[in-house]
Image 1 (cartoon, one colour):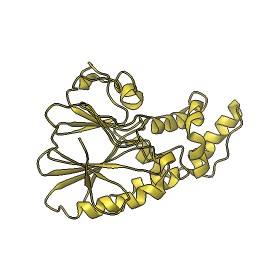
Image 2 (cartoon, rainbow, N blue to C red):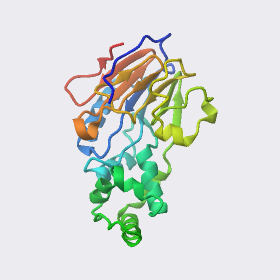
Image 3 (tube, rainbow, N blue to C red):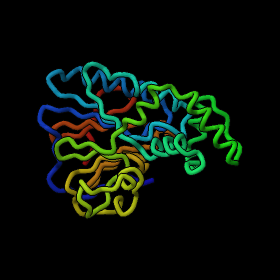
Length: 257
């Protein structure tokens, strides 16, 4: 976890003209936080009917928290009419799909949050042997609604809007954006987190927990550890402006530099 300390940044990144972006960090099975935050986002978006409004989720919807099933149900429904939506893949969704495809090779998923997802689908923890893993994967496949699986399989690795690149974990410094490896986009920590040189675009990411939305010269981290802290954060971007929206009363608050 970082302390949110900030460093000086070059010219501020800019979102596309006439566009308002809402960027939500790692949810990790906290539908109880997602639903009220989404309601606040929809209420704010309704105040800007002349904007092209996008809701961007940075991945890690499942695991750790107790309501993975409810989170996927919420996100697999069509968004509010006022909003376009982009859902990115996180490393936890990749691991869940890996377990479903090959339970023996993907058993590591159960060691970092997957058991909570099994529980949310009323699948018992497996015994630690091949038969147990195969049975658990079969039970999860049977319990997983088709539209949840379709949602997971259609997740994107990254999306660019204006001067911003949205991705779950980050990028590998020095590698062209078009050559970034999916494994880095989903899993990287270092050397991305400690990099100080500007990237080709301002990177907005989750994956690495900080106590507050973490603004650096070359990246913005939006994962505030919702599953453990009860804080699910939304970064709002328009032009060069940046605001913070969460489940507290009131509208977006300016994000400190």
